Image (cartoon, rainbow, N blue to C red; front, side, top):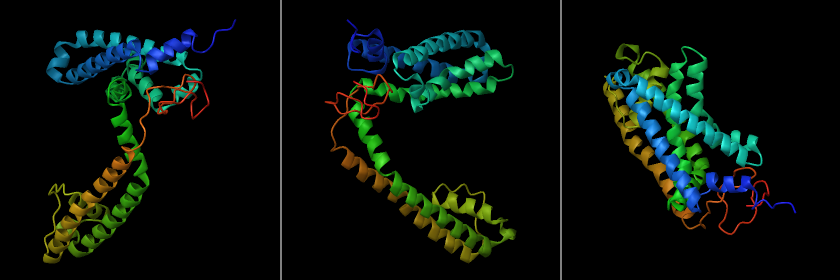
Length: 272
């Protein structure tokens, strides 16, 4: 008698690695979270010249251990998925690959140590592990709110881009090269800095008309900050009313975000 998917060892492996609604899955994610945290901490400390030079051999040894463990985990994820290419080309699949790639590049290609900064991408893997606790619903609400507001935000940002081009061009005409506004791109840079209320102060208007325009830009900046905040807040409030999702991950395509009572994947039709 042929084994069903739920009795298959690959399904059990997938349940432990990709899901967090079992004791084994929670333990796996907890261990992975600890490894990621220590790995990122090692990368941060090694960038401090005095510490990195003194403890270089220790950091190198830790990095080899972390890379070996993450490589094993990456291979196990590929094995436990029905369509490995689907997972490998997904967002988290690429992040997982970037987490181990720098060390191999450093070993195979001399002078490629600059790529080690990519290791910091391991921190992004924490977002996958957050589903292990009570953060799944909250994370899903935030994601749904951001996703629902993307079109409104895109239109808003397009309007902001047009606004800073107009304001920057106007300031270029008003102030001119003698006051530091040497060209329109530089003036647009000033408009962006002023509109965002950052205000570096490296370029500032000198004429009365230029100062008046700058004051108007500053006041507009407060409104610019408020608009996207309101859009996202509204969409998050609407998303919070939607049904919760489960921690189930499709064993075929690794897709997540299914309804709690879902029996099949809504993306590929695979059995959950």
